[in-house]
Image (tube, rainbow, N blue to C red):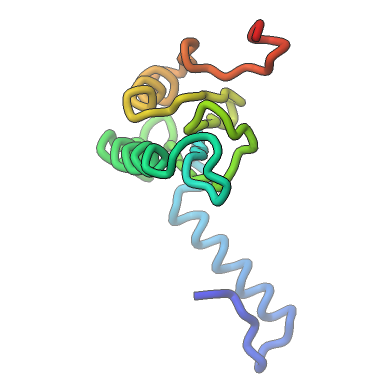
Length: 142
């Protein structure tokens, strides 16, 4: 339901209520316990980094696998992993593209097989997957 202010409430009352609801939602998703967050771009309006079927397959795999491994479960020891489907991360080549935050690590070619490696090696063990890491041209030698 949208947070549209009812006509009977003042703007300040509506804002306070919306803020309280947002705080409850943050608690429900475990916002304070997020250890890492993976953003995946592969299903965008532009659809330039990969085909839509490739992007959808990657996204569906990521969602299911994180849940299957219990990485999204509130109260997870070591913190939880959140995922977000990004419309566009502005790379537009060699996708699907992923970004792990707060590590600031970018990945290219995120097929389900590559995502499995990222999940196991980076999201669980904390070690970036060098083979699929996307670096700026001046750092990658490209």
